[in-house]
Image 1 (cartoon, one colour):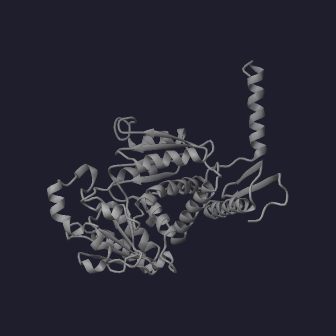
Image 2 (cartoon, one colour):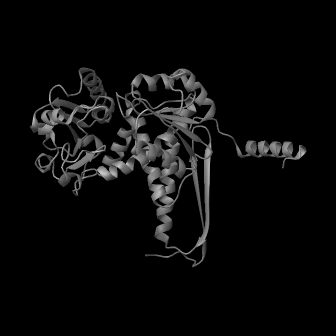
Image 3 (cartoon, rainbow, N blue to C red):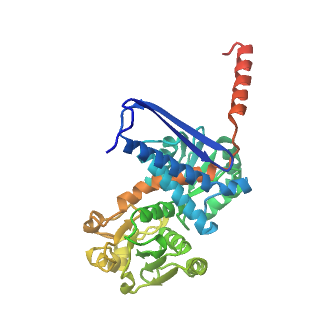
Length: 400
């Protein structure tokens, strides 16, 4: 391992991310002893994050209007890949020890109509890691759709925070909120879809591709109930040209409406999809994915009923053996061990569900950065002038 030419050296790394609305410059100055390989690793991580941040904001230069993340079907294949690449680039930079202040001085308002573990913690952590702040607005804490209309709530929040994330019961709520807000709105899950989960899932797949394959070469099989997670997975995989299969019992399969969207996606991307109760459709899967059997939180299926309906759709060693060599297991969590998946699979070397949970944080960082780049940026000269004016005002009034 080669060393730096000088034992004590000054390392100067300049990270420049050319965004749609400005330039983010981060300089790292440090005096320390370290091997050259680590310096190269850090520099490569910064460069990757810089390139992705610049690429992710090309459209803002053309159109400064805010954009929301409500449904992945509203984005092009390249835009989705840009978000995935940006998310992974930021993850790489942080793993190398650099926490980019890309959300500095920004506040995220988090609206939850449902309970959450991964969504809440990942959004809060993402904001903290990138220099921002998150406010939790739980059930009963704000007037969303109560004494205040959803539209009015959106207008108020637009004056108080920089970006909104909402986990809602009905999809129409997130749509109405996005329509009324003048700031970006991110869908943290509805009864229709779960787009932030989609980005985290694809980040996980991209990091664990079978040897010699790219995303568009992969076959993804979702096993069990046609939940909003199943629908979302079908949407994004077909959008990216992948092979998607929903293997589930009749009466609990993706609807004709879901399939119409996937069919349109496939025509544009070259992907394919199949909805079936034929077990042989699992063969040669690169990724086997499942979700809980109990349905939506607001309308849970009794245990006896769900076991009767889904008992043949448990992900166990036998089902995993039908997949391709090296097939990986995915689960959005929480899992009901002994029902939708066995301990043997969930805790096996083939399981990626813990990495997948960690990549919810990866996805949230990328989404927050991508959708806030269009906000007005100020030059250093403007900031210095504003600071001088405020300090003079306070000094004149004896407040300094």
